[in-house]
Amino acid sequence: MTRRAIRRPLSLFTVIIFLMSSLVLTTPDVGASTDHARVHMPNVVGLTRAQVYAAMKRTQLFFRTEGPGSSNARWVSVVRESPAAGALVPWRSTVTLTTSLADSHEPRRMPRLVGLTKDRVYAAMKRAQLYFRTRGPGSADGRWTAVTRQSPAPGTLVAWHDTVTVSTSQSVAHARRRVPRLIGLSRARAGTIVQSSQLRLRTQGLGATNNTWTRVVRQSPAPGTLVAWHSIVVVSVTKPVSRLVSSTPTPTPTSTSSSTTSSTTTTTYPGETTTSTSSTTTTTAPVTTTTRKPSTTDDYRIGDATWYVYTPGRCATWYLPYGTRVTVRDLATGRAIVCVVTDKEAAHGDRVVDLNQSQFAQLAPLATGVIRVKVSW
Image (cartoon, rainbow, N blue to C red; front, side, top):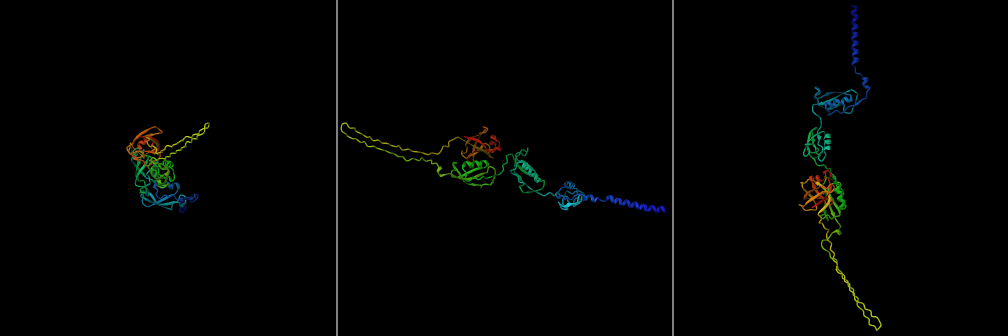
């Protein structure tokens, strides 16, 4: 009886000691967590489940979920978080995330792709997180160089990771140009500047028809305007009145001068001399002077040639009639092609011919843009 009475308190004491040790072992080490600095709450709104797990692992935080899909772990993305992103929270503390079964990526705006090269198109679509498919020249083998059209239009809202369509080309894409200031420049200077800007020049005014103008007095578009490559700049020109050439012969006034010296006879006595002065007459014949236009019967011109999209075998000049068959020879390489003039060239000056792109490519690469040629007919 006594032993049983003693064993009961010992058993009760053993149970108490066991429970107390269990409590000590399961209590979290609060002091250990306070030894770490507080961390910033990451921004996980819009992230997928895998991205959320990676972000919380980096910051060493725990999280619990609430909302659609949280009970069976089928949620897709996070739509809300507590505390807010950027808030300071204790290390390894537990935050609350509200989840959703839908993809939370917002629609994207379609970037402008027309005129961009292939590398720039890939970079723009990667930034927008969109896919694209190509059609047109070079799209089948991936040898396209630029975009000529896109669908949908730039600025249109499209779904994240949506696929859009772009029309491609194998031609070299050219950036827009700023119109240079031409007012007050001479003919040679204006032609050089327009050529270096890869634009075309159209003249109107005094001396524009026969290319004898000397100075630009007005231009359109205004200086500094952004225009497409090879756009036409219209200039009003003039020339001094003194340089006008008359086609009518201008006679020079004639003059006739005569001088007569009368003879003088002196009669003397024998042994004296006799002095006689004979008459002399001087006549100046009339002189006629005629000013004519300079000859334009040369059968060749040397200058610059460029290209544009036109019918193969045909070209454009500003000084030859339609139907003229011309030979264009590259002065650098000696290669030559033959074409027929069927179009009017806008630029005058050093620009002597505009070829279609296929025939220009027979003389030099299209990227060259302008070459020095001899045009003969």
